[in-house]
Amino acid sequence: MIRFARAADRPAIAEVVEAAFGQPDEARLVERLRADGDVILELVAETDGRLDGHILLSRLWADSAALYAALAPLAVRPDLQRTGVGSSLARAAVEQAREFGAHGIIVLGDPAYYPRFGFSAGAAANVKSVYAGGPAFMALALEPDAFEAPLSVIYPDAFSP
Ligand SMILES: CC(C)(COP(=O)(O)OP(=O)(O)OC[C@H]1O[C@@H](n2cnc3c(N)ncnc32)[C@H](O)[C@@H]1OP(=O)(O)O)[C@@H](O)C(=O)NCCC(=O)NCCS
Image (cartoon, rainbow, N blue to C red; front, side, top):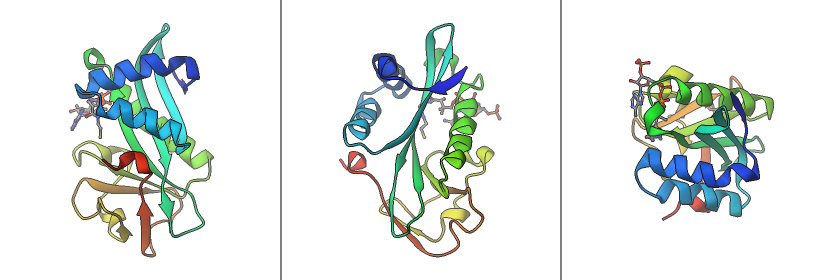
């Protein structure tokens, strides 16, 4: 089951995110994004009360009045990886972002994974960011013209080391 995260999920989310990445940095990123008020939405995957995965979208500061989101992090319990949980979370987050009226989503992630959800480096070609430039910097337009004009985006402070 995919649902919105609740405050009571936070310890389990931290556990899953840290276990997925094998280090605490991404769990700290999640906590800081929440503390700074930069979260757009958090979804969790749950089976019989056990938290299997988590995804977070945060607000990008863009030189446009439209809403642009950053997807990060996405994490699945190590024992359940490659069973479709991450894909379900990614697809649900994209649909929710559309519902929220976001124009586009940007991810800095594995170019072998995110294109299956519609992300591409080509779509991000007009986006200026400190992370732009490589194949890992990908975008997904939720509105057809979301990335047609040049766009500068600044990530929330939580992403800065
Ligand atoms: C990356 C991650 C979120 C993917 O979620 P998942 O539930 O394991 O993946 P799914 O079962 O939905 O998808 C499986 C497919 O993705 C591929 N895949 C999974 N992880 C991948 C990765 N890191 N890179 C490339 N492909 C990957 C698998 O080969 C499989 O492909 P197939 O369907 O063609 O066989 C999860 O493995 C994870 O938490 N990894 C550790 C944390 C991490 O790296 N997060 C990504 C941050 S950008």
